[in-house]
Length: 353
Image (cartoon, rainbow, N blue to C red; front, side, top):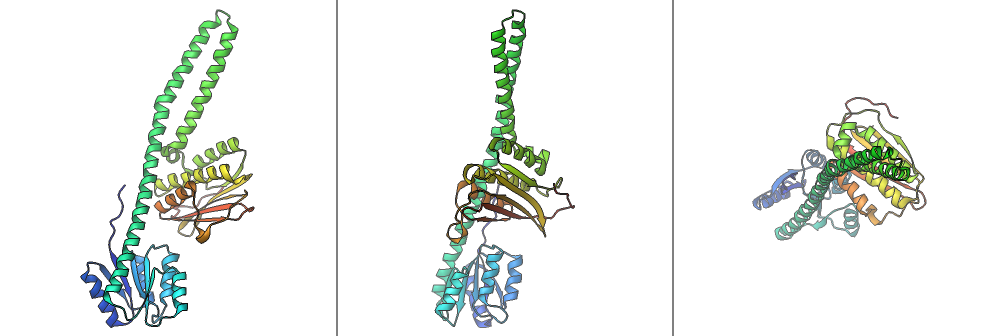
């Protein structure tokens, strides 16, 4: 699994032609790939087509404010560091820019060394964040490969061994019937039943681990079977609203959505004390919306809306791999909703059951 090469691209949004050309020449001479825009809408158009790790934007533009560009960056989750520059510094504008997610705020006139230093820091921050995401993606990918290996081992080795044990026990049983040793026969039959239950459990674990199982059955059917087993083991009622049939453009979408459901339901069973869970999958414009809601005890969302925990981190990473986003809504005493949205175009309409 290879990650995209990090390119040091810089977008300069400045209506003053002299300043714009100066910044273009300055950063180009340092090896950066530089694009420029004189208006806010022009900048947003560029941002919709290209990825820029760092953006330098004037606070006041002819059509928009630098704050509007900041809001666009965060709305689209572009993961760019934005430096706001202005000739009209005030404490209110500094606070506003930082509150909207600016990486830094620089007042004109500025020296080239100061600006270069700030851009180097911003570029390194974005580079490290991308490296962390790439590492997380590789970990998820490696986990799926390991799941597949364990699934094969369970099926090929343990499953076959249990099958041989069962056949051997039944053969012994048949031989002992003629000698009327009822007690021994009863014990063997009990052991045989236990082996059969173990085989069924191995089969279940193998199916849960293997991504090919999800692809072969289809996401909706595989998830329904998993939900049935989950309800029996936990006593939690699960109401599913899933398309009967649908074709995914990429098998990874099926696998990661299935794993997201597993992670979420495992968290619910362990921590929520919920009695009912609703799972919905539906198209929303050009995206696919997948939500899991429980009526459990809920929890307090920490400052900034960030939620920790291995299961929830895994959900975020899988959504990120698919180019999607995750929203988690919870309130103590009022349950929790996990909503995942990924880019997707349904090829045909589907009935929901």
